[in-house]
Length: 223
Image (cartoon, rainbow, N blue to C red; front, side, top):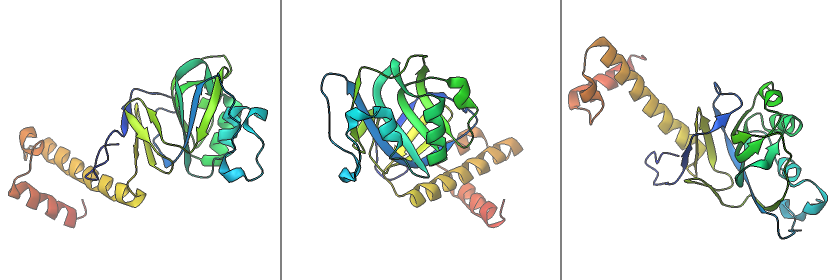
């Protein structure tokens, strides 16, 4: 995510494909990491609460079974698209039903047209392929992962907008308040440029005391 004054870096990753390009996504990160097959990992997720061993279930289904309302499934599958399709329309339906948010998949999906028809969900992925997921091993659930330039930890706030995904360890309320403040300044600045009050150079730099006072009055007037 952008730093937003919090000191968090390495949180932004652009250039995604989406199933619902007009939608934005926000929620808590539930992370998963896949590695190329080679070793069988039999550890259990969720503190061993009666779950079946991983090798008895499809690993992508195991991840989805952990999801709750407002979660965003964030999957590192090392950019694999062919044989790296984490969800199709059946598992996509499960993600939508459980989270009403979506998923960020550094890999592939299949059944793109079916997932496009789902409501209350947006899926960010690297590509689409008809193959099923294979030749990968689930290395961990709710562990720190890295996708491109972004580091994501379990519980991070995930924000997805067209073509970009971000995560932040900052508290969700603080992120929202800071975002609203920045958005208000952007609306004010664009409005004053459109009105010819200020030039773009004046707005797109450190504001003078006059502009700052004008902005504070604009806020008070509820504009």
